[in-house]
Length: 193
Image 1 (tube, one colour):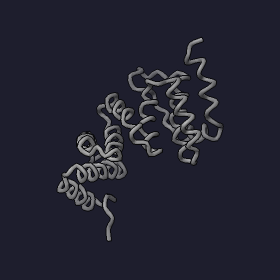
Image 2 (cartoon, one colour):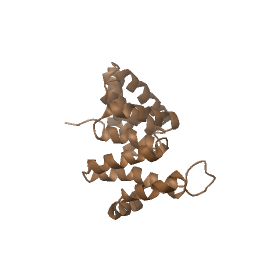
Image 3 (cartoon, rainbow, N blue to C red):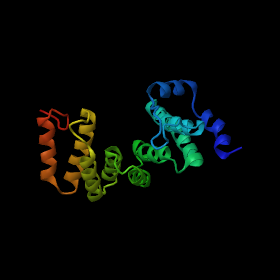
Image 4 (cartoon, one colour):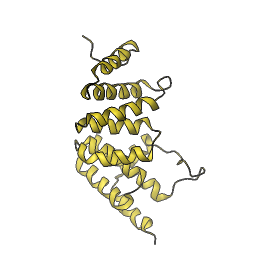
């Protein structure tokens, strides 16, 4: 029996039926890029579900279950894209940005064309008071986002990061410019009086 097959019952036991329903309804179910349209293996699907289960547990206030699931991901699929990107967001969500740094860096390295990866890394760097590095990640995120096709949420996410990174790295005029851009576009980047 392969290691992946042996891990299936252990990983599956970490998800309860209600969470599986939530993941099935709201989780992603795409064919993996680079697989020539082949479906994921049972192990790949379960790793993906477990990654989404980490966030489901956090959403319902079960940090202990989220930590347990993430530990299982690291033990059974340490180098998977799911584990790496989940680590970035999990540690950020539980206010352990210093632990998120390596996962976020690895996410950016494995997804160099993802504005979201750079944005997540940028926020973690801001929280870690690494403002010059956050500024660089914010610039990359801005360069990758097609603002004409992006949702308002995506635009606000990138603009907020740019404002924070610009301001705290000493580029205050650029931060003001982002605030003005957001106000003109009616994107919620600034509190109005």
